[in-house]
Amino acid sequence: MAGKEYVCMMRLHSDIPQDRVEKVLDEFQGPLYQRPPVRSSVKRRLRIRTVYYNRFIEMDERNVLFKVGCEAGTYIRKLCYDIGEVLGCGAHMQELRRTRVGPFIEDESLVTLHDISYLFSRWKETKDETILRKFVYPMEKALQLIPKINVRDSAVDALCHGAHLTAPGVLSLESGIKIGDVVAVFTQKGEAVTIAEAAVSSENMLKMDHGFVAKTKRVLMPRGMYPKMWRSNQ
Amino acid sequence: MQETKEPWEITRSLVVKAEEETNPHYGHRPEERPIKEHMRFGIINVDKPAGPSSHEVTAWLKRILSLESAGHGGTLEA
Image (cartoon, rainbow over all chains, first blue to last red; front, side, top):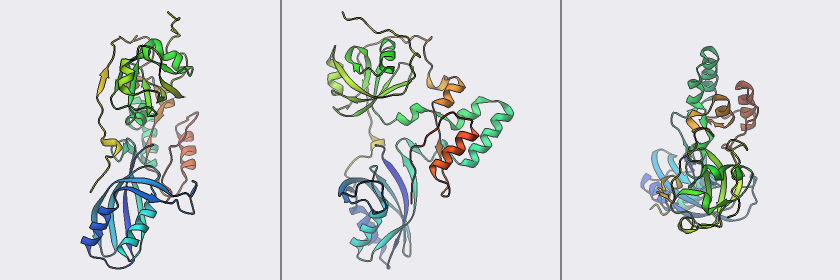
């Protein structure tokens, strides 16, 4: 699940000195207990979510601006409420803006609906495809943070049909993969083939010469892009 | 004090097990995808305004960009 980052404006319910606010913000880092609010689509059981960091930005009377990096499923509203409890005065989340979801951040890739409208008109006028490519990215961008396994051309079509990945198909892989990790399987050209679940660790994937290394969970590449080269048993 | 590293700061190294050439006749490098395929398998980072729902925005995008299918990866409900 994608990590997130937000800029949040929290409103305190009474005046608190800045150094106390900064100290408490700093304490609310690491794994936290949270129960989803009444208004949520998930089951309301107590669960642990990790706040990677809280970074105080500035404060103006009772308004506190801070940046928070956290695990998916962390309720910032609840974070503000809990910070208010520890400060003793109470607090609530006044405003929130997400500044990161997984690999997507506020950079030149971020476009408003106005931007999209404008760029699309320009494309229609000029027929210049590079205009579309300025704001539409290859889907592979979404997989940037997922550990990768690169495979031979001969392995691709079977994977497109839902076959699981076996050791002989593997050409290279990223370090640090553990059993159960979500991995992305790529061709030598950098095209995403499947999303899979690692059946063995990176180290074992390198050592094995046969057997399953990853269970295919989702096929991304259409069938037939790579030819059928299913090897016969040797 | 920060305890856990954020996922986007994790660095990994690529370990090569075997080498093999890829046939240029099959597939395309993502940057070189023909435009139709690029749009079909593309992703847009949308700064969605607070008013419309992500479903409405997706429907609007499908219409404007003449896309056969489009989905959204979730938004912020504040």
